[in-house]
Length: 365
Ligand SMILES: NC(=O)c1ccc[n+]([C@@H]2O[C@H](COP(=O)([O-])OP(=O)(O)OC[C@H]3O[C@@H](n4cnc5c(N)ncnc54)[C@H](O)[C@@H]3O)[C@@H](O)[C@H]2O)c1
Ligand SMILES: [Zn+2]
Image (cartoon, rainbow, N blue to C red; front, side, top):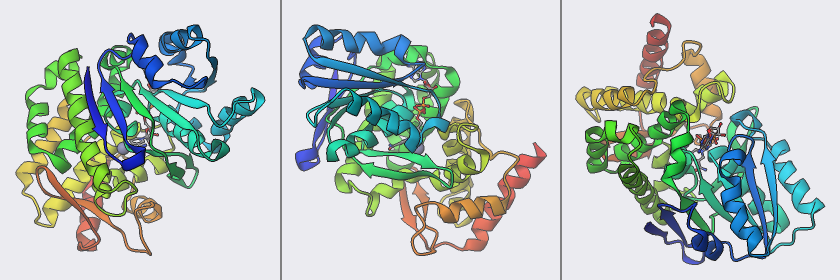
């Protein structure tokens, strides 16, 4: 078992990476509460609900479950309300702990419900997708989508603990595994050339789901995210570098309709677009862009935007994204492998060139 500690004063918490699901004493120590509500979805419940629920029930706790429909399109306020329905109908007090058992969609909604129920209750993340294990379960961003914008309704709410069991990835569809890997690549690009090289060198072992190497990949990503979050918990400045590729990616997700492009797929294309723009601006050379493209492509991820997108649809969605401050578009740009920054200082004509280039390329292919 690997343990990392996210140090955020009274909101500090551990991240455990290893055989968490079969570790009953870890589950019981983490969830010492008398009242527990496990939130999961129709796909994950048959796989992993029992193994979490059984030790808690056997310990004599009051345990309920909420099984939500599966999919990004259900990441809405209406769905979060179903969690409140169970909490209130079954008289759960403010001493309840919520457990998010599933991918990023379940984690984001459960965290948001925990932030709001009786003005805040504890919650524990048990992420079961690669994306949620390397990214969304750590850092305390929670929330839901609105038809006009991705993740526009939300709260910062740090979990009490994160329990990551890489063996859950054995049941994850390969497309979803790839999608999570987009955030892994992003972490290397923004913070660590060494980690990026490790990914390049171990790609086939990683995609063969070798549990030892997977634990290293997950720990490496959590470590990168931990360091960034400890400097800037609520994204006043440096934390925004974690959004590399996301302004482009959110534009793709919003324009295409939630769920048609997986978040990770949209981010993969977005990272390439941000790299392309960084090269046009003379910040990096085209060899680095090609290296990122090669790793992304070898991971089964898109390196282009959808053919339905136009420069105008990108700009409209990008200006609505929450990274826009008082009408100025801020983007994460790459300085070198392992270093990125957020800036509004770029030639918008070159952004136009990037958008034209990708939209034309998408239509041609
Ligand atoms: N809060 C954050 O900081 C943050 C960061 C990145 C992404 N996100 C959000 O995360 C969401 C994407 O998360 P995701 O990629 O985990 O998607 P997801 O939660 O939709 O899960 C992907 C699919 O895998 C299924 N699944 C989950 N675990 C499984 C398992 N072990 N075996 C088989 N199937 C399994 C799910 O039911 C779903 O169908 C997006 O909404 C995105 O905005 C949040
Ligand atoms: Zn993301």
